[in-house]
Length: 287
Image (cartoon, rainbow, N blue to C red; front, side, top):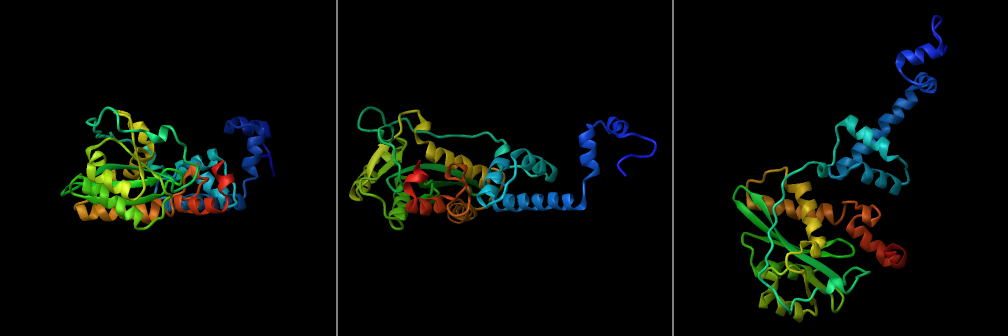
């Protein structure tokens, strides 16, 4: 029965502070509907776990659509709130940056302001950051494909020297074939402006490009990666040793970020999956 013998629908709706239609929806709630809610919550939880706590409702909805399903952002956000799930990107921590301003004047062209790469392996960006451990800082240099977002080369060490950049570069060219004349972009730190780095880049046919002085946004590819990686893997965890930091960085880059982490700008594909898809449908995916 839809009405209590002593009360009308309108009276029940007023008592429950809902509309009459809302009251009927409440009456019509079935075990099947509850099971559907639980199934959708389990789906969200699974995707959130796959993303290791890095996905918010937008990306979760995008992944569900990519897998052939459908869910609205409002519903996903509500379910996540009910389950106490939140992307680590909603947490906040102060951020420190280092930037060298020693290399000034001419001789440091910014090729990325003149050319727009449309395909992978024609332009890469590099930078260095520091990661905390109980034994002190560990410095990490990465080299990122500008188009696919894949980290192609990386190396970490106790000191921030030109050798750090060279080893990261050699790890890249030892694994991947890049186009002749590929752009190698970085800031003007002394490691990148060193003679040794310039010589090895020329030997491998790379064209060196530099950010403008005091303009970290010119290397947003590297900046955004480091910001993401630190939030998702380092800001909220403690590592006792440098070796633990190295292992965590390797696992994040090679296992999670390159191969599994879905990115909105890549159509909710991982960088590796996007690169492979781009080889088959370059024009449609670039557009």
